[in-house]
Image (cartoon, rainbow, N blue to C red; front, side, top):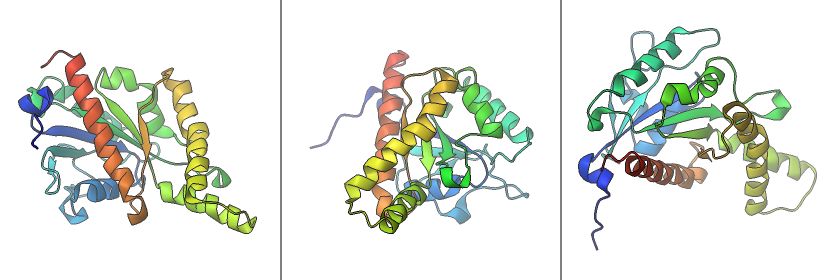
Length: 229
C-alpha cells in the first residue's frame, strides 16, 4: 500500500541537511554510512576542507541533500564565520533551497581521558544555537558510540561482571545523559534536546536508521508548525 506523502514532502520532495562538527568528530564517516556517499565523492577544497556550498546527493536516499561544514580547528574563527554566513544566506532562499535540518555533531567524551563534549568553536555554536539557527530544527548527533560501549564492556570484563547487551546500552544511555545532555542543557537552558548516539561500525548500523527517522520527524513537525503547508 502506497502512503500519501506528508504536506512537506508534497511541496519539497528533498530535505537539505547541514552537518556541523569539529575536525575529527567523524562527520565524513557519518555522511558516508548514513547516505551511501563515498568519502572520495565528498567535495573538498584545495586545503582538503569540506566545501559547505556544495550539495551532496545521496544515491541511497535521494530525498536528502547534504552540506558538510568545514571542520572547526582549535583557535580558528574563519570556518565558524563561514558556517554562520551559509546559514543566514539559506534562510532567504526558496523552500527547496533552504536548510531544513542541522546535525550538530559532537564526539562522546571519554571521562577516563579527560575529554569534554564541547570546546572551542563547537561550544560557541551551542551557546549561540538559538541566535544562529532560529527556529530551524536541529539534532545533537553524538558520534563514536562504539568507543563508549567498548570501554564499558572492557571495564566489566576486567571486573568479571556478567552482563547483557541491554545492560551495556542502559549504562551508555546514562553516561550520555550525564556527560553530553546535561552540559548542553546547562548552556542552552532547553529541557527538550533532540539527540541520538551513533557509530560508523556495522554493529550499530540501526542507529543511523534511527537518525534518519528522527530527522524526518522533526523536519515534518517544523514544517507544519511554521504554517508553510
